[in-house]
Length: 320
Image (cartoon, rainbow, N blue to C red; front, side, top):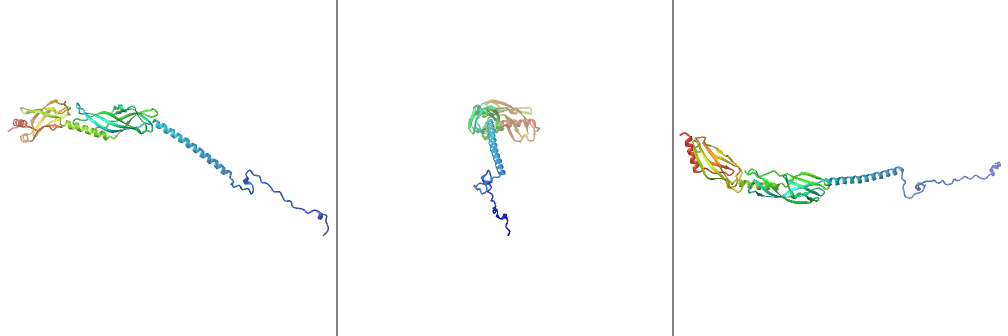
């Protein structure tokens, strides 16, 4: 091979490049680096931040709402006043001078059913003040027993053994000072019904045995009219009820004055006149004669003198 100057030059050696460093703010991004942590993407960081914000707002809203609800409940409780009224016992005493009027004694229990302390400013039973109940102060669920007198009327004719339950009204002061008046139902009304029934039944029984005829029956024949005179006496210890008077005899008619005797005082007397005429000549001679009938006492039957007087009336009134 021919010689060339280039062949005397030094052989060419390939250059090896120096290592290139990769810079990163996070050591985890360095090639070969591994410290046990995983890389977090920007999206994950954003979602985490948003979730924390929502939780914080939710907790704050719950706390604020709970506080508002507590405040609202507290304000409502401070304005609330509720007291129940329940009968415990009842008794009565008959008024001797007026048996229709019963003097009663009642026992009731008041219970505070509201969440705060309540004061009973005033109370009334059937429109009549209950003095002992006024100014009673009750803590929540606390109770107080009150005794008070009352009056109710029974019919003297024995027709009343039940009466309408009186209405109760209470004026109550709530914890915030508000005063309200309200109608309150009467609980355990069986005490009322039992007491009234016992009192009015006793009055009816007493009245039924008070008014009776006294003395003899007086008769006088005037033409074709027989005048029958009787006197009714109140033999009881109290004012009587009204007493009706009738005359019962087959074949006869009667006009009575007065036909209803009004209530009379103990020991008092009332004269009654009965004008009897023959209404049926075929029946009167042999018909049944019951005589004077009083209601509710039952009256009395015809005596011998009355039967003879009616026979004389038939004799002058009916053709032979």
